Length: 365
Image (cartoon, rainbow, N blue to C red; front, side, top):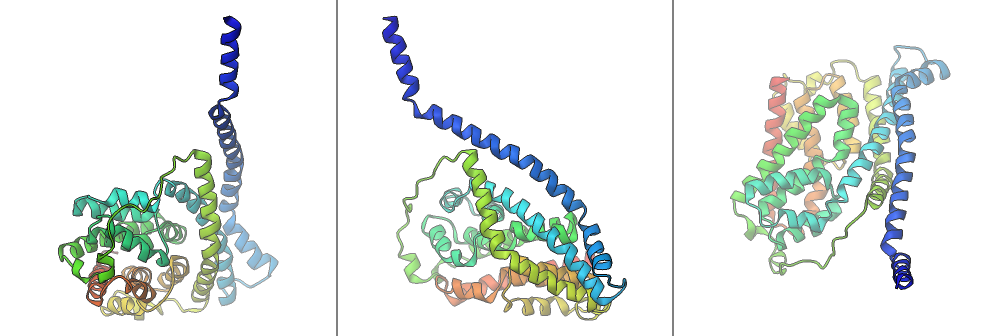
């Protein structure tokens, strides 16, 4: 009997695939941790020496004179470019791991059936960790509406996702510091919450295109997977490859434009155009920003240079928010599912919120 029991026990162990899989997953996790620790140390050491690097290249290697327009522009470019890209890689990786917990299907399930006020808050917060590109706005919008998500809650998400995402926050932190990044985060979320709430109260579902209303509500058949940490880390690595691979050129171009402004635009020049004293500067900045097509990676370095040259923070924030949240190409895409009256309401409510943010920060800062 003992021999029979031992045989069964041995067979049970050898035929159990879960034990081998668990061991393999644990080994993979350990490998990632062992690789990550020295990489983070090297990252920190390099990041701390970027200022010395930019000055050494500009004034020693290139032998350019100090207090020169070209020297100032080159030093700005050599310092800001690696700094922003290094921060971007680190933060995008972390958000990529977090995003593995919030697939589009799971996001719909979280938002569906919630009361509007709570839904607006949740949708705005989810927009931070689930930033989808504008080409995904239409299928996501349809998915939200047809699965029972209130219209106003959907708009809170669609406002927050492009405007308050990890790319915007990391660039703002890298260029302005944590206070400005926190101000932008707070005001961006507030605009998304309030604008979505207002649109929800207006009960404008009738201004959805008819074919959207005819879509039957229901699941899309996607099966949620239980992911292990090794897979989630791979999600973070894939996010770096995909997102940084797409936006790095915008980062470099934006910083290049900012470097030109930093080096060549006279001090105080922008104060006469976008300063606190020019009351009309905030609405003009919003109107100029709407037809422009750029993402956070391209516009924030330019904003940094504008502020350095005397532009008011509120005016510049209003300009940046209008470029990111009210871009004309996004309106064209949304026209496929929204009637003109709803698009105009969306633009008007968000635009009014941005104007308030601009004037408010020009008054208090």
